[in-house]
Length: 433
Ligand code: LLP
Image (cartoon, rainbow, N blue to C red; front, side, top):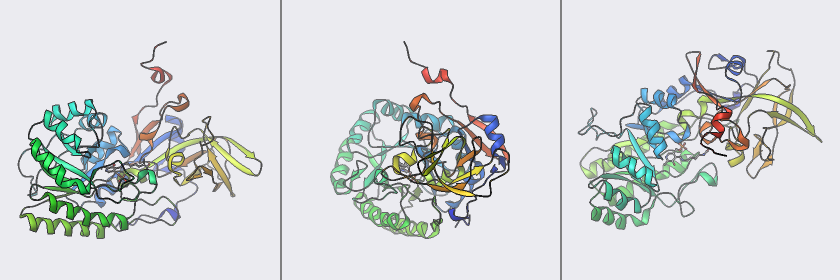
């Protein structure tokens, strides 16, 4: 298991990210700025080396440089849209597997899998034209694909009837979720696939994001039961994503070796039953990139509203939406402009520039403003919002006509711009008067 420090020990003052100076990064690229540490991403990919296949849920962080980095670690990708297919191809992934058996004696790995609950017309065209493997989250996708790709092999994404996430909005199982094919419908869905001439080669379950190993562990048994219903056509099983990362003080990294063993045992039982090998996949998003990413912001105002002190920075929920959407907690640290940190700390609320009261980084679920103990800050200091590498930039928006921030990848101490900041021209591109 990773032995990194837990969130409790994070410093409140920081002047570097992955060996690069926060102040230099801010001066060179402007703020707000997303910064990713390449080594952390590599380490997280390698933590999962026991699994036959690590499939990155690129929705968490889909910058081409990040995709190319995980590709160099032997990680393949999931795509949920035509845009994500396009990104995967641009990062060097092949659209489909080479035929035959992989070098490890296992069935071939699909470099890109399209996982969704619908095909919009564009994505159906793309998977058909490129021969991309499809993970169907709704039975209606079966006939739609069969019409375009006769005889295709598919994966079924099954909703096992239970789910769990860090928020109700990230729970993807049970009756409250639109995701996946309902577990009780498998016999009927298999008849539909057979009628349509498609074979079912894969089975996938993903019960939610930011869950815990106790909930995730229940999935292996549920998948094993459904695999028994599908039978010998299966060549690949996927545990989905959902691996937790520590955000809050006191949270620690989960023991992933026990989790792998549980799945490996389920896989072996199914192999014995079917008489052939099964590829075992995991599909993390957050786990691979969350801890690698930080947002550098600049403090632009410090003020008191009655008894409460606010730091207002130049990033808002247009930059990082997780706090306003889910009340998510992100660690923060201060990088004093002149290198001299104040000796005192104080309780502050941290907000952004948007014309909306919910534009607060220190809020709890339900939108209640909370405070954080931070070193006393002045205008011009940099505030670093941490563990922002998953569902950070990818959920940024142009609200209030704010440009999307730049992204920088730091590797071996040197920083490389991997996406330039949007310009005012970018903001109105495609519009007409
Ligand atoms: N596989 C499927 C089919 C998924 O829908 C997801 C996430 C993943 C894998 C990856 O889950 P992860 O390993 O990252 O937990 N915006 C939310 C998270 C939404 C997750 C959506 N699906 C957040 O900021 O917490």
